[in-house]
Image (cartoon, rainbow, N blue to C red):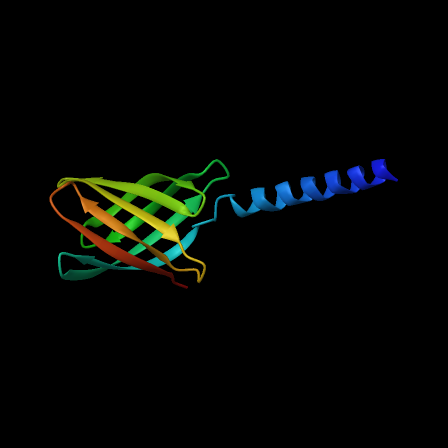
Length: 123
């Protein structure tokens, strides 16, 4: 009887570990997004398309006030980041996928200015 109880506890423990592991797996940020950006009180919009690989690699395309360019980045858990590189230098977007399906985060314009953004899935 005691060994059956231990076996049952072991199975429950293993199931709990798998459930927790699934919760910490990377959320997928793939898709088309409409970003509303605020940099030091100046607002603008951007269209961002992202594809996330199983390894957490993010590739995509940005169209907005900073140009029209491809980018690469990474995703871990609910967090991601990508870097745009252009004539004005590097621009880094860092965000978190929220429970409601939106993205919120920060943008750093090559150390010259910082801001925030909110992204919603489009189309």
